[in-house]
Image (tube, rainbow, N blue to C red; front, side, top):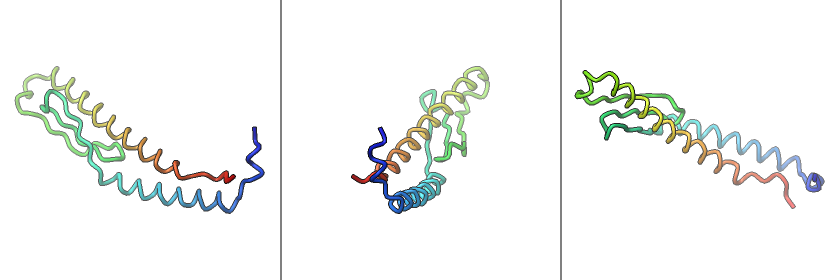
Length: 106
């Protein structure tokens, strides 16, 4: 089960961890500037989030001003779509960071 541990080079592991930390910091900084837009109601509601999952803008078509029920549904749908885009981006970033990490050299 742990047969590869004898080949573990601690110096390589430290380098890999350090590299991953640097890459994670860089990705976090880049995500602050990325923009993801979730739309609902055919674009009547647009929710904009940054790569950290923070809502940074909300646009609502003026025709929804008197329809509170529809407005609530469309805002929630827009938030969920934008958040799904942010999560997919975070997943992609995480996979790219760990794909190069192999501390168990054989």
